[in-house]
Length: 304
Image 1 (cartoon, rainbow, N blue to C red):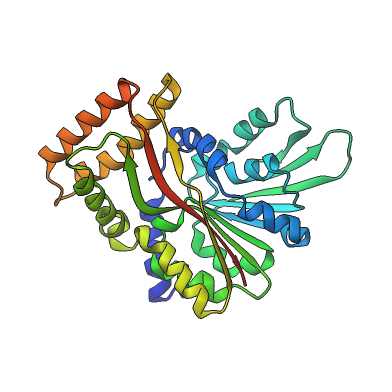
Image 2: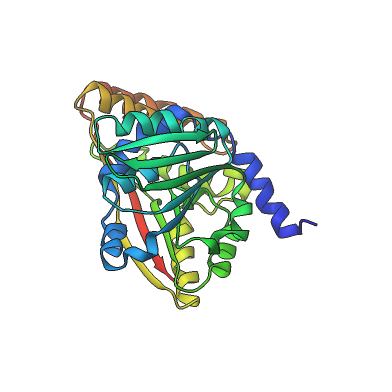
């Protein structure tokens, strides 16, 4: 029987399932790849054996696996878990396209089982997809050496983060990457920048998932709980630095602007006139090629 705490996490999972569009996930991948810190790669150099079995929670369409390939982080097995079946269905096409012309190929055995194979080498790496809410991961995380959560910490419930850190065994690695830290800096300042950022951070905490998400305070929560458990806690900057010099960068900035504008437009507390004026000015800067943004992110590596 599911307990009250588990019911709260389940409620969060069901409410989050349709939040991320495939177009946004695909558009942000190049920026996540470019600005991730070297924390994980440096740990891999120290102890490769701790990367044999990996579970990627909230995996989306598999961008973390492609990051590992790009950084030559070699694993034997990876489980990709996500509640959104549409994102998982895109895994094969996106990975096949990414590997085109490279030294690896992706082999499809079934809709949920794949092999990553290096050209001219018989040995393969096993990849499995699991369409499930992340609550189920708490029962299997200790079957893996590395637990990865990319761009997830701010949308997770406090309860889940604590349960994850409590349940993990010794000698494991937990990797929270691209964690939003609550800071957005615009090169072209506007009088409403501070107000909009304040309202956005409130929205992250109170409106998203009906109050279950921890928002930008996730970094502090993860640090404090890791210290309480006497884990080795490491943190490095992974902030996006966005410009609007060409059509591609302009398109992405407009998408990012919408991740702020749309939730605030729907809430009951943000001044809609101020929001509309702010968005209009930001769009004008983007289209003029003058917009530069630093979106604050942190990477966290925990050794239990």
